[in-house]
Length: 470
Image (tube, rainbow, N blue to C red; front, side, top):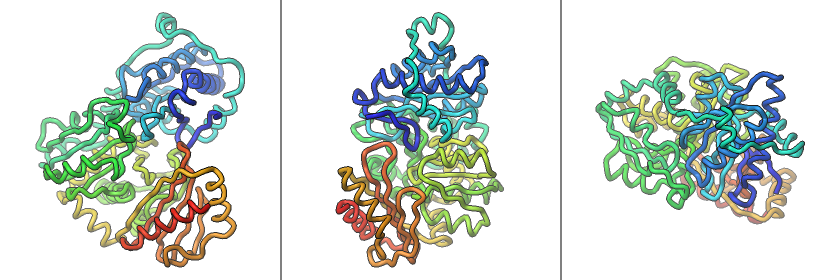
Protein backbone atom coordinates (compact mmCIF):
# COMPACT_ATOMS: atom_id res chain seq x y z
CA UNK A 1 0.00 0.00 0.00
CA UNK A 2 1.08 3.60 -0.57
CA UNK A 3 1.69 6.04 2.25
CA UNK A 4 -1.34 8.28 2.71
CA UNK A 5 -2.30 10.69 5.47
CA UNK A 6 -5.68 10.25 7.13
CA UNK A 7 -7.70 12.53 9.39
CA UNK A 8 -4.67 12.96 11.68
CA UNK A 9 -1.27 12.08 10.26
CA UNK A 10 -0.10 8.78 8.80
CA UNK A 11 -0.86 5.46 10.47
CA UNK A 12 -0.21 1.90 9.40
CA UNK A 13 0.33 -1.62 10.75
CA UNK A 14 3.77 -2.13 12.27
CA UNK A 15 6.12 -4.21 10.05
CA UNK A 16 3.64 -4.23 7.17
CA UNK A 17 3.56 -0.59 6.02
CA UNK A 18 4.85 1.07 9.17
CA UNK A 19 8.49 0.11 8.73
CA UNK A 20 11.74 1.93 9.44
CA UNK A 21 12.21 2.47 5.72
CA UNK A 22 8.78 4.09 5.35
CA UNK A 23 9.22 6.16 8.52
CA UNK A 24 12.40 7.54 6.99
CA UNK A 25 10.59 8.25 3.70
CA UNK A 26 7.91 10.24 5.47
CA UNK A 27 10.51 12.01 7.62
CA UNK A 28 12.44 12.97 4.48
CA UNK A 29 9.29 14.46 2.95
CA UNK A 30 8.56 16.40 6.15
CA UNK A 31 12.18 17.61 6.32
CA UNK A 32 12.06 18.79 2.70
CA UNK A 33 8.81 20.63 3.37
CA UNK A 34 10.16 22.35 6.49
CA UNK A 35 13.47 23.27 4.84
CA UNK A 36 11.65 24.79 1.86
CA UNK A 37 9.64 27.03 4.17
CA UNK A 38 12.73 27.96 6.23
CA UNK A 39 14.32 29.74 3.24
CA UNK A 40 17.86 28.95 4.36
CA UNK A 41 17.38 29.71 8.07
CA UNK A 42 18.57 27.29 10.75
CA UNK A 43 15.80 24.88 11.77
CA UNK A 44 15.10 22.94 14.96
CA UNK A 45 12.16 20.55 15.42
CA UNK A 46 10.66 18.71 18.39
CA UNK A 47 10.28 14.91 18.18
CA UNK A 48 8.25 12.92 20.70
CA UNK A 49 6.88 9.38 20.98
CA UNK A 50 4.30 7.32 22.84
CA UNK A 51 4.49 3.94 24.62
CA UNK A 52 3.92 1.74 21.55
CA UNK A 53 6.21 -1.04 20.38
CA UNK A 54 9.46 0.47 19.03
CA UNK A 55 8.10 4.04 19.18
CA UNK A 56 11.35 5.24 20.77
CA UNK A 57 13.37 3.62 17.98
CA UNK A 58 11.11 5.05 15.28
CA UNK A 59 11.58 8.49 16.88
CA UNK A 60 15.36 8.04 16.61
CA UNK A 61 14.92 7.15 12.92
CA UNK A 62 13.03 10.42 12.44
CA UNK A 63 15.92 12.32 14.07
CA UNK A 64 18.48 10.56 11.82
CA UNK A 65 16.72 11.87 8.70
CA UNK A 66 16.24 15.35 10.11
CA UNK A 67 19.95 15.52 10.99
CA UNK A 68 20.99 14.49 7.48
CA UNK A 69 18.80 17.35 6.19
CA UNK A 70 20.56 19.90 8.45
CA UNK A 71 17.65 20.07 10.88
CA UNK A 72 18.38 19.91 14.60
CA UNK A 73 15.98 17.91 16.70
CA UNK A 74 14.97 17.98 20.36
CA UNK A 75 14.00 14.40 21.25
CA UNK A 76 11.79 13.63 24.25
CA UNK A 77 13.55 11.75 27.04
CA UNK A 78 10.66 9.31 27.29
CA UNK A 79 7.09 8.72 26.20
CA UNK A 80 4.99 11.92 26.33
CA UNK A 81 1.47 13.06 25.43
CA UNK A 82 1.10 14.45 21.93
CA UNK A 83 0.18 17.82 23.41
CA UNK A 84 3.55 17.94 25.19
CA UNK A 85 5.16 18.06 21.75
CA UNK A 86 2.72 20.79 20.73
CA UNK A 87 3.46 22.78 23.89
CA UNK A 88 7.24 22.52 23.37
CA UNK A 89 6.91 23.67 19.76
CA UNK A 90 5.06 26.79 20.93
CA UNK A 91 7.25 27.40 24.00
CA UNK A 92 10.47 27.29 21.97
CA UNK A 93 8.98 28.92 18.85
CA UNK A 94 9.88 25.98 16.63
CA UNK A 95 8.55 25.69 13.07
CA UNK A 96 7.20 22.17 13.56
CA UNK A 97 7.21 18.97 15.59
CA UNK A 98 6.72 15.26 14.92
CA UNK A 99 4.99 12.81 17.25
CA UNK A 100 5.41 9.06 16.80
CA UNK A 101 2.03 7.63 17.78
CA UNK A 102 -1.04 5.87 16.46
CA UNK A 103 -3.16 7.58 19.12
CA UNK A 104 -6.21 5.39 19.92
CA UNK A 105 -5.60 2.72 17.26
CA UNK A 106 -4.97 -0.94 18.21
CA UNK A 107 -1.49 -1.97 19.34
CA UNK A 108 -0.50 -3.35 15.92
CA UNK A 109 -0.56 0.22 14.52
CA UNK A 110 1.89 3.08 14.78
CA UNK A 111 2.03 6.45 13.08
CA UNK A 112 3.39 9.97 12.72
CA UNK A 113 1.62 13.24 13.52
CA UNK A 114 2.91 16.59 12.30
CA UNK A 115 2.51 19.63 14.55
CA UNK A 116 2.72 23.15 13.13
CA UNK A 117 4.38 26.22 14.72
CA UNK A 118 1.09 27.07 16.50
CA UNK A 119 1.08 23.65 18.18
CA UNK A 120 -1.90 22.25 16.31
CA UNK A 121 -2.47 19.60 13.67
CA UNK A 122 -0.86 19.98 10.27
CA UNK A 123 -2.93 21.99 7.84
CA UNK A 124 -4.29 20.41 4.66
CA UNK A 125 -1.73 22.46 2.71
CA UNK A 126 1.12 21.02 4.77
CA UNK A 127 -0.19 17.48 4.37
CA UNK A 128 -0.51 17.97 0.60
CA UNK A 129 3.05 19.34 0.42
CA UNK A 130 4.44 16.37 2.36
CA UNK A 131 2.52 13.85 0.25
CA UNK A 132 3.83 15.43 -2.96
CA UNK A 133 7.41 15.07 -1.72
CA UNK A 134 7.12 11.40 -0.76
CA UNK A 135 8.29 10.21 -4.18
CA UNK A 136 10.88 12.90 -4.78
CA UNK A 137 14.63 12.42 -4.35
CA UNK A 138 16.49 10.07 -2.05
CA UNK A 139 16.12 9.60 1.68
CA UNK A 140 19.02 11.19 3.52
CA UNK A 141 20.18 9.56 6.70
CA UNK A 142 22.84 10.03 9.37
CA UNK A 143 23.38 7.52 12.16
CA UNK A 144 21.83 8.51 15.45
CA UNK A 145 25.22 8.41 17.15
CA UNK A 146 26.77 10.74 14.56
CA UNK A 147 23.83 13.12 14.87
CA UNK A 148 24.33 13.26 18.64
CA UNK A 149 28.09 13.74 18.28
CA UNK A 150 27.57 16.66 15.91
CA UNK A 151 25.04 18.29 18.19
CA UNK A 152 22.18 17.80 15.72
CA UNK A 153 20.02 15.90 18.20
CA UNK A 154 19.68 16.24 21.94
CA UNK A 155 17.33 14.81 24.55
CA UNK A 156 15.07 16.99 26.68
CA UNK A 157 12.31 16.46 29.21
CA UNK A 158 9.15 17.79 27.52
CA UNK A 159 6.98 17.53 30.64
CA UNK A 160 7.98 20.72 32.54
CA UNK A 161 6.77 23.03 29.74
CA UNK A 162 3.65 20.92 29.29
CA UNK A 163 2.74 20.89 32.98
CA UNK A 164 3.44 24.62 33.27
CA UNK A 165 0.90 25.26 30.51
CA UNK A 166 -1.73 23.19 32.33
CA UNK A 167 -1.06 24.97 35.63
CA UNK A 168 -1.50 28.37 33.97
CA UNK A 169 -4.82 27.45 32.36
CA UNK A 170 -6.60 25.31 34.98
CA UNK A 171 -7.53 26.36 38.51
CA UNK A 172 -5.77 23.45 40.20
CA UNK A 173 -6.04 25.08 43.63
CA UNK A 174 -9.83 25.05 43.41
CA UNK A 175 -9.85 21.38 42.36
CA UNK A 176 -7.53 20.43 45.24
CA UNK A 177 -9.98 22.03 47.70
CA UNK A 178 -12.86 19.96 46.28
CA UNK A 179 -13.47 16.81 48.38
CA UNK A 180 -14.19 14.52 45.45
CA UNK A 181 -12.81 11.11 44.60
CA UNK A 182 -11.52 10.65 41.04
CA UNK A 183 -10.44 7.52 39.19
CA UNK A 184 -8.19 7.93 36.13
CA UNK A 185 -7.59 5.18 33.57
CA UNK A 186 -4.49 6.03 31.52
CA UNK A 187 -5.02 2.90 29.39
CA UNK A 188 -1.25 2.12 29.56
CA UNK A 189 -0.57 5.23 27.49
CA UNK A 190 1.25 8.51 27.97
CA UNK A 191 -1.29 9.97 30.41
CA UNK A 192 0.41 7.88 33.12
CA UNK A 193 0.06 9.56 36.57
CA UNK A 194 -0.09 13.14 35.23
CA UNK A 195 -3.54 14.09 36.57
CA UNK A 196 -2.86 12.40 39.90
CA UNK A 197 0.51 14.15 40.29
CA UNK A 198 -0.91 17.59 39.41
CA UNK A 199 -3.59 17.31 42.11
CA UNK A 200 -1.56 15.98 45.02
CA UNK A 201 -1.71 17.77 48.36
CA UNK A 202 -5.40 18.62 48.65
CA UNK A 203 -8.78 17.18 49.59
CA UNK A 204 -9.35 15.81 46.08
CA UNK A 205 -8.30 12.15 46.01
CA UNK A 206 -7.08 10.80 42.68
CA UNK A 207 -6.18 7.17 41.94
CA UNK A 208 -4.83 5.95 38.60
CA UNK A 209 -5.46 2.64 36.85
CA UNK A 210 -3.19 1.24 34.12
CA UNK A 211 -0.56 3.97 34.46
CA UNK A 212 2.31 1.63 33.61
CA UNK A 213 3.43 1.54 29.95
CA UNK A 214 2.37 -1.53 27.97
CA UNK A 215 2.90 -1.74 24.17
CA UNK A 216 -0.08 -4.12 24.02
CA UNK A 217 -2.30 -1.76 26.04
CA UNK A 218 -3.59 -4.64 28.13
CA UNK A 219 -4.95 -6.38 25.04
CA UNK A 220 -7.44 -3.64 24.08
CA UNK A 221 -7.22 -0.64 21.80
CA UNK A 222 -6.35 2.45 23.90
CA UNK A 223 -9.53 4.26 22.90
CA UNK A 224 -11.59 5.65 25.83
CA UNK A 225 -15.01 4.39 24.72
CA UNK A 226 -17.56 2.54 26.84
CA UNK A 227 -16.66 -0.97 25.67
CA UNK A 228 -12.97 -0.44 26.56
CA UNK A 229 -13.63 1.03 30.00
CA UNK A 230 -15.41 -1.86 31.71
CA UNK A 231 -12.99 -1.93 34.64
CA UNK A 232 -13.07 1.84 35.15
CA UNK A 233 -16.87 1.85 35.10
CA UNK A 234 -17.00 -0.96 37.65
CA UNK A 235 -14.38 0.64 39.92
CA UNK A 236 -16.05 4.07 39.86
CA UNK A 237 -19.18 2.48 41.32
CA UNK A 238 -17.32 0.20 43.73
CA UNK A 239 -15.12 2.97 45.12
CA UNK A 240 -17.94 5.55 45.10
CA UNK A 241 -15.96 7.96 42.95
CA UNK A 242 -17.45 11.24 41.76
CA UNK A 243 -16.12 10.69 38.24
CA UNK A 244 -13.91 8.46 36.15
CA UNK A 245 -11.57 9.92 33.52
CA UNK A 246 -9.75 8.01 30.79
CA UNK A 247 -7.14 9.17 28.28
CA UNK A 248 -6.17 7.37 25.07
CA UNK A 249 -2.76 6.12 23.95
CA UNK A 250 -1.23 9.56 23.39
CA UNK A 251 -3.51 11.33 25.91
CA UNK A 252 -5.14 13.72 23.45
CA UNK A 253 -8.64 12.23 23.86
CA UNK A 254 -10.82 11.98 26.94
CA UNK A 255 -13.44 9.48 28.06
CA UNK A 256 -15.69 10.18 31.06
CA UNK A 257 -17.61 7.86 33.37
CA UNK A 258 -20.31 9.15 35.73
CA UNK A 259 -20.73 8.12 39.39
CA UNK A 260 -23.27 5.48 38.35
CA UNK A 261 -20.73 3.83 36.02
CA UNK A 262 -22.38 5.13 32.86
CA UNK A 263 -20.13 6.38 30.06
CA UNK A 264 -20.79 9.93 28.90
CA UNK A 265 -20.47 10.48 25.18
CA UNK A 266 -17.89 13.15 24.24
CA UNK A 267 -20.60 15.51 23.02
CA UNK A 268 -22.13 15.57 26.50
CA UNK A 269 -18.69 16.27 27.96
CA UNK A 270 -18.13 19.08 25.48
CA UNK A 271 -21.49 20.63 26.42
CA UNK A 272 -20.54 20.59 30.10
CA UNK A 273 -17.26 22.33 29.26
CA UNK A 274 -18.96 24.94 27.04
CA UNK A 275 -21.46 25.75 29.79
CA UNK A 276 -18.60 26.10 32.30
CA UNK A 277 -16.37 28.21 30.06
CA UNK A 278 -19.20 30.59 29.16
CA UNK A 279 -21.20 30.61 32.38
CA UNK A 280 -18.38 30.54 34.94
CA UNK A 281 -15.30 31.84 33.15
CA UNK A 282 -17.15 34.37 30.99
CA UNK A 283 -15.52 33.12 27.79
CA UNK A 284 -16.98 33.74 24.35
CA UNK A 285 -16.45 32.78 20.72
CA UNK A 286 -17.81 30.38 18.15
CA UNK A 287 -18.10 26.63 18.70
CA UNK A 288 -16.89 24.07 16.15
CA UNK A 289 -18.20 20.49 16.03
CA UNK A 290 -17.53 17.66 13.65
CA UNK A 291 -20.40 16.25 11.60
CA UNK A 292 -20.54 13.18 13.87
CA UNK A 293 -21.07 15.11 17.10
CA UNK A 294 -24.25 15.49 19.15
CA UNK A 295 -27.27 17.68 18.42
CA UNK A 296 -27.14 18.80 22.06
CA UNK A 297 -24.30 21.14 21.01
CA UNK A 298 -26.63 22.73 18.43
CA UNK A 299 -29.31 23.36 21.04
CA UNK A 300 -26.83 24.63 23.66
CA UNK A 301 -25.04 27.08 21.36
CA UNK A 302 -28.35 28.44 20.08
CA UNK A 303 -29.52 29.07 23.64
CA UNK A 304 -26.23 30.78 24.57
CA UNK A 305 -26.21 32.90 21.41
CA UNK A 306 -22.97 31.32 20.15
CA UNK A 307 -22.23 30.72 16.48
CA UNK A 308 -21.92 27.03 15.58
CA UNK A 309 -19.73 25.75 12.74
CA UNK A 310 -19.86 22.13 11.50
CA UNK A 311 -16.81 20.55 9.85
CA UNK A 312 -15.71 17.12 8.56
CA UNK A 313 -14.16 14.60 10.96
CA UNK A 314 -10.50 15.36 11.73
CA UNK A 315 -9.15 17.88 14.18
CA UNK A 316 -7.14 19.61 11.43
CA UNK A 317 -10.42 21.16 10.22
CA UNK A 318 -11.09 22.53 13.71
CA UNK A 319 -7.51 23.76 14.17
CA UNK A 320 -7.70 25.66 10.87
CA UNK A 321 -10.75 27.58 12.05
CA UNK A 322 -9.13 28.25 15.43
CA UNK A 323 -6.34 30.07 13.58
CA UNK A 324 -8.63 32.02 11.28
CA UNK A 325 -11.63 32.97 13.42
CA UNK A 326 -12.72 33.74 16.97
CA UNK A 327 -13.26 30.17 18.19
CA UNK A 328 -13.91 29.28 21.81
CA UNK A 329 -13.84 25.48 21.60
CA UNK A 330 -13.95 22.71 19.03
CA UNK A 331 -14.53 19.00 19.40
CA UNK A 332 -14.95 15.62 17.76
CA UNK A 333 -17.32 12.80 18.73
CA UNK A 334 -14.24 10.66 19.40
CA UNK A 335 -13.28 12.60 22.53
CA UNK A 336 -10.81 15.08 21.03
CA UNK A 337 -11.60 18.59 22.30
CA UNK A 338 -9.48 21.72 21.89
CA UNK A 339 -9.75 25.15 23.52
CA UNK A 340 -8.18 27.95 21.52
CA UNK A 341 -7.08 30.01 24.53
CA UNK A 342 -4.94 27.05 25.64
CA UNK A 343 -3.72 25.65 22.29
CA UNK A 344 -5.44 24.95 18.97
CA UNK A 345 -4.97 21.27 19.77
CA UNK A 346 -6.72 18.40 21.53
CA UNK A 347 -5.63 17.49 25.04
CA UNK A 348 -7.32 14.79 27.10
CA UNK A 349 -5.43 15.69 30.29
CA UNK A 350 -6.44 19.35 30.01
CA UNK A 351 -10.10 18.51 29.39
CA UNK A 352 -10.16 16.05 32.27
CA UNK A 353 -8.84 18.75 34.58
CA UNK A 354 -11.35 21.30 33.23
CA UNK A 355 -14.19 18.89 33.93
CA UNK A 356 -12.93 18.55 37.50
CA UNK A 357 -12.75 22.37 37.67
CA UNK A 358 -16.41 22.39 36.58
CA UNK A 359 -17.39 19.99 39.38
CA UNK A 360 -15.32 21.87 41.96
CA UNK A 361 -16.79 25.24 40.93
CA UNK A 362 -20.44 24.22 40.74
CA UNK A 363 -20.31 21.91 43.74
CA UNK A 364 -22.82 19.68 41.99
CA UNK A 365 -22.46 16.08 40.93
CA UNK A 366 -21.74 15.20 37.33
CA UNK A 367 -25.12 13.48 37.20
CA UNK A 368 -26.85 16.71 38.30
CA UNK A 369 -24.98 18.75 35.69
CA UNK A 370 -25.94 16.27 32.97
CA UNK A 371 -29.60 16.23 34.10
CA UNK A 372 -29.69 20.01 33.86
CA UNK A 373 -28.21 19.94 30.34
CA UNK A 374 -30.76 17.33 29.26
CA UNK A 375 -33.64 19.27 30.81
CA UNK A 376 -32.63 22.37 28.89
CA UNK A 377 -31.43 20.90 25.58
CA UNK A 378 -32.89 17.40 25.36
CA UNK A 379 -31.63 13.94 26.20
CA UNK A 380 -29.68 12.59 23.23
CA UNK A 381 -28.76 8.93 22.87
CA UNK A 382 -25.71 8.11 20.78
CA UNK A 383 -24.14 4.95 19.36
CA UNK A 384 -21.55 3.79 16.83
CA UNK A 385 -20.71 0.57 15.01
CA UNK A 386 -17.46 -0.13 13.14
CA UNK A 387 -17.87 -2.54 10.22
CA UNK A 388 -15.12 -4.38 8.37
CA UNK A 389 -16.49 -4.62 4.82
CA UNK A 390 -15.19 -5.62 1.41
CA UNK A 391 -14.33 -2.70 -0.85
CA UNK A 392 -17.14 -3.68 -3.23
CA UNK A 393 -19.64 -3.37 -0.36
CA UNK A 394 -18.20 -0.01 0.68
CA UNK A 395 -18.38 1.40 -2.84
CA UNK A 396 -21.89 0.04 -3.34
CA UNK A 397 -23.06 1.55 -0.05
CA UNK A 398 -21.93 5.08 -0.88
CA UNK A 399 -23.27 4.87 -4.44
CA UNK A 400 -26.66 3.89 -3.03
CA UNK A 401 -26.64 6.61 -0.37
CA UNK A 402 -25.80 9.36 -2.84
CA UNK A 403 -28.04 8.23 -5.73
CA UNK A 404 -31.08 6.87 -3.90
CA UNK A 405 -30.91 7.58 -0.15
CA UNK A 406 -33.61 6.06 2.06
CA UNK A 407 -36.70 8.22 2.59
CA UNK A 408 -37.06 6.96 6.15
CA UNK A 409 -34.93 5.24 8.80
CA UNK A 410 -36.34 3.14 11.62
CA UNK A 411 -39.76 4.73 11.10
CA UNK A 412 -38.50 8.34 11.04
CA UNK A 413 -38.93 10.30 7.77
CA UNK A 414 -35.61 11.56 6.38
CA UNK A 415 -35.85 15.33 5.79
CA UNK A 416 -32.24 16.32 5.08
CA UNK A 417 -29.05 14.91 3.62
CA UNK A 418 -25.58 16.08 4.71
CA UNK A 419 -22.56 15.06 2.58
CA UNK A 420 -19.94 17.17 4.37
CA UNK A 421 -18.09 13.98 5.38
CA UNK A 422 -19.57 10.68 4.26
CA UNK A 423 -23.37 10.66 4.09
CA UNK A 424 -25.57 11.77 6.98
CA UNK A 425 -29.32 11.13 6.97
CA UNK A 426 -31.21 13.54 9.25
CA UNK A 427 -34.74 12.79 10.40
CA UNK A 428 -37.75 14.95 11.12
CA UNK A 429 -37.11 14.72 14.90
CA UNK A 430 -33.35 15.51 14.42
CA UNK A 431 -32.42 11.84 14.74
CA UNK A 432 -29.52 11.12 12.41
CA UNK A 433 -27.54 8.29 10.88
CA UNK A 434 -24.04 8.88 9.48
CA UNK A 435 -21.96 6.59 7.25
CA UNK A 436 -18.30 7.39 6.70
CA UNK A 437 -15.03 5.66 5.85
CA UNK A 438 -12.42 5.63 8.60
CA UNK A 439 -9.39 7.73 7.78
CA UNK A 440 -7.01 5.41 9.64
CA UNK A 441 -8.41 1.85 9.41
CA UNK A 442 -10.08 -0.29 6.67
CA UNK A 443 -13.57 0.04 8.11
CA UNK A 444 -16.86 1.90 7.64
CA UNK A 445 -18.21 3.68 10.70
CA UNK A 446 -21.96 3.87 11.28
CA UNK A 447 -22.98 6.58 13.77
CA UNK A 448 -26.46 7.29 15.10
CA UNK A 449 -28.16 9.65 17.53
CA UNK A 450 -31.78 10.01 18.61
CA UNK A 451 -33.81 11.85 21.23
CA UNK A 452 -35.50 8.48 21.82
CA UNK A 453 -33.50 5.85 23.74
CA UNK A 454 -35.73 3.09 22.36
CA UNK A 455 -35.16 4.20 18.75
CA UNK A 456 -31.34 4.30 18.91
CA UNK A 457 -30.76 0.51 18.58
CA UNK A 458 -33.27 0.39 15.71
CA UNK A 459 -31.44 3.23 13.94
CA UNK A 460 -28.10 1.47 14.33
CA UNK A 461 -29.53 -1.86 13.20
CA UNK A 462 -31.03 -0.17 10.13
CA UNK A 463 -27.67 1.44 9.34
CA UNK A 464 -25.74 -1.80 9.76
CA UNK A 465 -28.15 -3.71 7.49
CA UNK A 466 -27.90 -1.02 4.84
CA UNK A 467 -24.09 -0.97 5.01
CA UNK A 468 -23.73 -4.74 4.83
CA UNK A 469 -26.10 -4.97 1.92
CA UNK A 470 -24.08 -2.31 0.10
